[in-house]
Length: 107
Image (cartoon, rainbow, N blue to C red; front, side, top):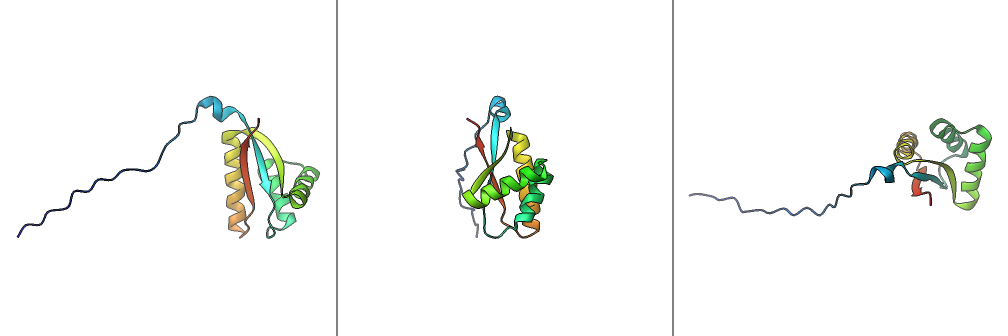
């Protein structure tokens, strides 16, 4: 008795987009979103450590996000902004907080 493996064809559904170097060097806005879980003092510490902001500026951004739902943190080149956001998210998750930042092109 001989068994044959069925012929299997896999079709990928992932699309890769290659960004141009110029697009990666364009400025991006780092935006912080308010949440009802992350303590305000923790947000200020994250802003100071990962975005190199002074205490007063960090407080102002945190309060703007708290009252308006979101706030502009800084404007950076894409790769630098992405790395800082990753590090901030990683630290927040380690502490059990859902603190969220995102990027948008600076138009």
